[in-house]
Amino acid sequence: MLSYRDNLRTDPGPRFPMAEHDSSSRQYIIHFPARPEYRFSNFIVSGGSRFALSCARDICDGDIAPYQSLYLSGASGLGKTHLLMSIGNHLAERNSSANVLYVHCRDLIDALNRGESGLPGNLGTPGSEIDFLLLDDIDQIAGHPTAQETLYRVYNQTLEQGGKMVFAGRVPANQLEKTESFLTSRFKWGMTAELLPMDDEATSKLIQKLAEDLGLDIPDKIIAYLLKRIPRDFQSVKSAVTRINEQSFQQKHKVTLPLVKTALDL
Image: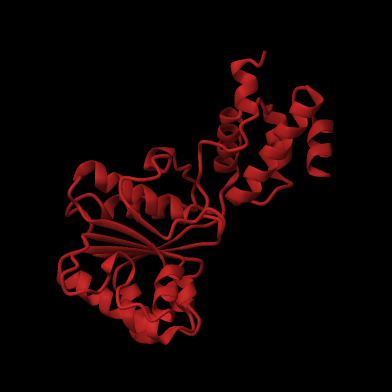
């Protein structure tokens, strides 16, 4: 009979997501509350993400933030989507009637390419009143002039109606390629914050949390070893912990340095 610990360890998915959505599981339009695993409380903060987290909290806390838009930038796997989802869930908890919409930029572009009269979430329509728009992977708007013009109108309309917006992209607004200045200038009107790779402390916490969620014990000395050998993005850390867990389960052995080297081909 499998124990509770064994049941946890055979579960391939951690309960602590922080990464951007992969293409196989991405949801393009989300109304909140949704994806309850995304919370401010379980976002592992480091020196490179503390300011971004603070801005994300501020913009959804009533009138505290002196800005109506926030632009988050940073490489894939550093927590931009986690923050977007956390904002949505936080707002839904505070006011269930708030119209909070998450849209992936790819869905906006695809709808325009198909010539659809309606946009995702009724964006830009005269009767559409969005209290909070969360637009992910804004980089994908590069080279799509129609989508850029549409988003420009949506941006202005949302501001005129007193709504707020948060954008997330892999590069800062001033580094967006093939994107018109009339749009990038709007992104820079509000607050901008960059997420940087996690430091040792944050990465250690992430390894520990992912391991705990799998019922796995990774000794501190092994974590110190991993810090020197794995990239500092969520997917890389998750992959390493998952492979270690699988190797430990196959060998029916606790985590040791030889086991880790075998699991990660080091």
